[in-house]
Length: 216
Image 1 (cartoon, rainbow, N blue to C red):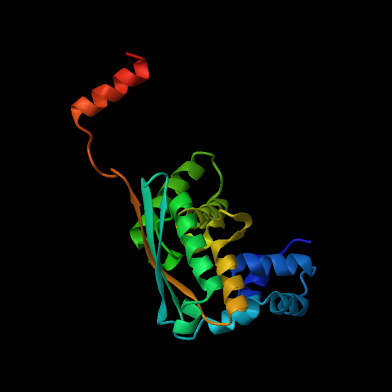
Image 2 (cartoon, rainbow, N blue to C red):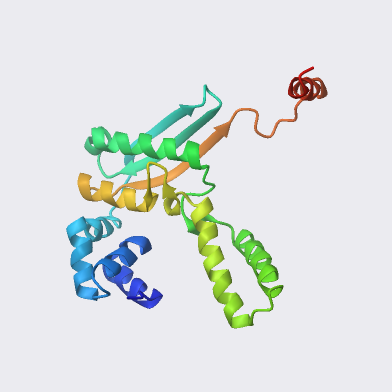
């Protein structure tokens, strides 16, 4: 059966679970709201959502270096207690996320951090492209809504497909870790470095690359 956005939003409000988790729960339970709630509880995802309001001020700053020192990531992940910060499962999670950032190159942690003007710029591009097809305005707005969601999925860490398991998002992996560890965990911030990014190469370096490519 077809699962509507209204059903997904209703389940999300009731459980606090992620949108993709809610949609999957409804799909697995034939659209039955109560069964979907039970499904999320059994998976530990609803419980993870309840923990999300608790203060997470401990944690660790993790790092990851990739590609022979050409890509580096610094990442701050918070939890509720120093005890959990020293937990192997928590430290593994931090390392996994740092590796994901190195591979997937997100720009923000969550969609709320994306500047409003950046979203409006994307909308205008999508709107212009859609109008060229001659579609009516109400259809165009729905197209824009879908494109913006995809845009968030490309640039926001929590909404990206997790590189080690593309069938789930980073948010889903976070929820699973919260449920397993039993404390609220929050990915606060990160910085991704790429060797030489933003630097202009000297003309001699560029000439040498061209010559090498030409086999000179």
